[in-house]
Length: 141
Image 1 (spheres, rainbow, N blue to C red):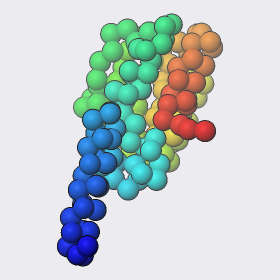
Image 2: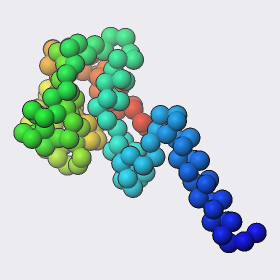
Image 3: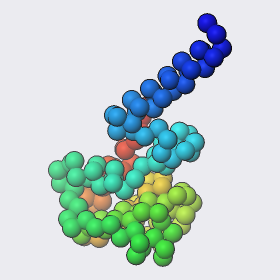
Image 4: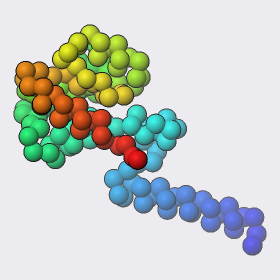
């Protein structure tokens, strides 16, 4: 087998693997090398929202994207607000930690994502449910 044929076959295999990931919901290129090393860094607020919506008892009433209004103030890259909880996605875990610290008991940090409890703050069970959902996303044993 010639070297050229080996290179072509290897290239086609890489493209095929990337296509399979993409077709089944994962974009292997999203997040760059950081996404490969720390997959949770590529998690979006859309995926967090979908996680909440998939579970009964975790409402996200009147969810609205507020990225343009909120992120310049707090340093996030994505933001969503609902009546129960707000979700902030940060590019840097340290920036997320600093913002979470400003929230006190009303906040929960899960790596690059920070939750701010609105109506849920008076309900510790709800806080734990939202937090556990985010903490359990994109993890493996």
